[in-house]
Length: 288
Image (tube, rainbow, N blue to C red; front, top):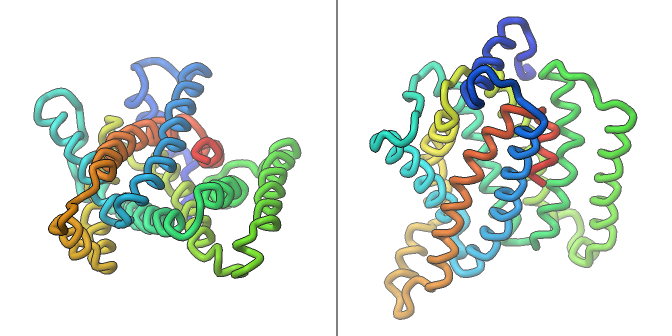
């Protein structure tokens, strides 16, 4: 079965409700507000990709790095809540259930992204991410009730794909190994396409009254999943071995890990805010 249609009359008020909660009362999403949200999310997304690559150079534990990031973001939100600095939605089972599907896709997407960064360079990951808006635009039209891309938008999306194909054609690693050189980037591509589409569905249908709500839901629910992924790769043992070694954890690795946690918190907030204002295709394109 496909994703439920979230453009029905019953879904529209819920989307307006969450947009109103995330934006100043009585104010509709202005061009300036959308532009700022895109700028913030774009900056955080690009920074996250680079910081993750550098962090994994010093701390080659993909799942453990991500686990630290989601724990840090969850701790930030909970601390802000209990200190009275942030308004945060309570965890309610009826709202947790749809987020579990998103968290599953998010967790697998993070894993695939980290694995892709380990075996491929940043440029390769960016190229595959750049091709996802075309898939998301089709999924939006099929499952979220949006129109298919018009001629001008289609041309722009096709140009992106042509650029991606040109990169693959000229990549020496692809010439030497073949399609298996892109195993994790391809997996990442399909997971991201689903995650972006389903994420927009959640924003439209699950009524949360604060921006910190979806940030807490996604990060806190991701903690057990990321711990399982780390355990499957025996990363806790490897992390302990590095910590107990004569050299210990590399200083630069710890600094970069801390920086990645800060950027991770920023991308969680800017991402959910931007997603509430734009289409899934635009959101995906901005995150490239």
